[in-house]
Length: 218
Ligand SMILES: Nc1nc2c(ncn2[C@@H]2O[C@H](COP(=O)(O)OP(=O)(O)O)[C@@H](O)[C@H]2O)c(=O)[nH]1
Ligand SMILES: [Mg+2]
Image 1 (cartoon, rainbow, N blue to C red):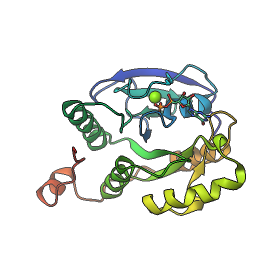
Image 2 (cartoon, helix red, strand yellow; image 1 turned 180 degrees about the horizontal axis):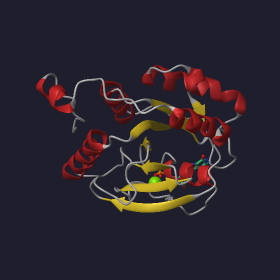
Image 3 (cartoon, helix red, strand yellow; image 1 turned 90 degrees about the horizontal axis):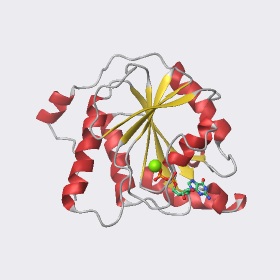
Image 4 (cartoon, rainbow, N blue to C red; image 1 turned 45 degrees about the vertical axis):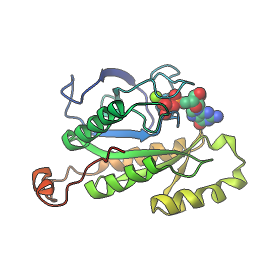
């Protein structure tokens, strides 16, 4: 699916209602500065749709975009930024928790990691969290332009080990040269073609009675 139309809908400090809510959602998650906003811009062919930043950790809001008037792309606040106090981190954790619990329309999460680095504890925790919640996701290794084509597969090995995925399941991406765009476009088709499933798993209330799934605040 080529993105022919994209518009910013809203920014929220707390997940809640917004205009047009009800369409399928795809969320973009990853640590601060990994390239979430750049991916959104590249995908949409728009330079300034999502604000990119060289100074990480500034946006702690959930940004909503409407793409092709058919689905919402959710730019989640980045994690792992340095120098945030405990209260700030707790606030962020609550925000993510609320989003994942309340977003009935969420179909899939793009989990971004920098292809040059091993996943952090936060990346691993996000991975565990999504698996526990049964939320489908795809790992996208960003900034692929920073390393040679030949080195990419080798770089993927520690990422795959840490996040329990196979190399062929990971999409190498570059917002600079467009690497991976075809793959992401194809993935969008697959995700959005899926019929809406009735929730089969236990409800959040039931889960909470058993072993609680919590985004742990460290
Ligand atoms: N070379 C290169 N730089 C990138 C890429 N994606 C993002 N960046 C740069 O990384 C920085 C953070 O990007 P941004 O999209 O704001 O990250 P976010 O915090 O995850 O939204 C910016 O300076 C971007 O220009 C990429 O694919 N290749
Ligand atoms: Mg951003």
